[in-house]
Image (tube, rainbow over all chains, first blue to last red; front, side, top):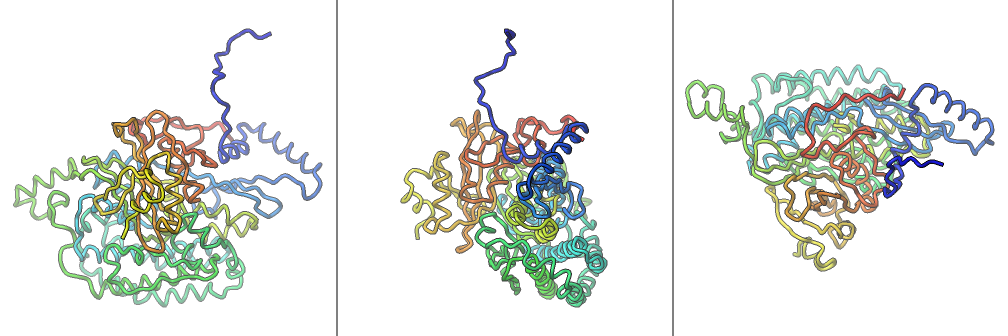
Length: 440
Length: 162
């Protein structure tokens, strides 16, 4: 018989593939012929099996599916229209931002983290800069804190507007998007005015904000927040009692509050289930303790409650922005520490020290004491936390984003089991995942 | 008022190796690797402070190691909804055969967070129900967030799947 030694190491234990890998490999045909053979086999078995004992139909929903909010792939096991199980496959948008941050200086990495959750750039940079400020033991001046709060809340409104518009599209309410994107565009104009960019704003610096508020900004922002409550009424008028919207969202995607907490779900999906957890209240940061606002809570925890919670959150954000505008403190918008913060541009022509500091900061960056820090902010999707570790050099040893979308997406599987396929679309929408944040 | 250390020392003697505060004043407990599961279960319970929310699991690759043959430093961020307290657990994983106990049975959210650490660092979690790669393709070689994994220059990855 065979006497050729193939060199196979028999001491290695036979390892079974982990669940997700096994299932994804099973559904992926490597050649067209293999795919055709599998389909034929499936059809043959389906014809033989008695009704009720049939194999599930495995369907790839995504990665390119308009209702999956980007590139989410769900390997779905279907029994008729009922979802038996799903296996989320993510990573299609993975760009290795955390690895790249390790190769940049601390202040260069800010530009990268904005691009993680691309609908809430201010929250990403806020979490990151707060962590670095913790490591440096920097105190951010009050004016910078207020500006940060003001822009974060404006960002919350724009993010919720995208969610509302796209969720409407998924459930057949086409016109909502025309209205929400009208207001969102005005808010993006404000972002452009203050930060120079509409989408991936790199405005928060370590120690404060890159620039002070430009002249004329406050008037435009005030006009925006004056109008916003009536606009929110308009969206609610389109949806709140809309029979299709109500039918599609009521009673959908309910999980018990304890299970949601166990799954790490935060943000509107958790608050819709009645859990009063908002980091702005639970662990106030950036001066949120000085603002008067309430945390909207739901009662049922279904997709409709998540809609109501987000609508109410937008109204609260408007309130917070108004308080920011009314009580904006005077003073510097960034900490006065020349070892960390770029000197004012005008000084470069007159002061040798400023020129040297500027040169050093731009070429080699600032060093951060050895240690680790984690700080979290309440983003439109829940807790965005940033873990930064430093080895004492000018580049981070590790930057890790705890992204709310990534963690919240885990709740989709228990939600979707036993639900209808079309309801799963409403569930994905109601969780409001941003795949840029999930995959990073 | 007794801190978490006293509480754990009373219930699980010897499980906490070290305790310190970071620059932001957050408490970090360094836990004996073999006893992570016990400590996790205790902290989640009422007596341990009710840390019901596991916010984050992440890892740092310390190439030089800690001098005891360990290289991977894991950080678990805990949050207590009732008291608002935060706590970080630190566990070291071995350089040669990095493996720690999974806390997925204690906090379900650790499922994907631990898969990400496994994917990026190659730290294995014993008792995890589904330790697949999560962000990278299944047949990716290496663990990119290790400090000895070079940046750039990786092969363009094609699949022959149709």
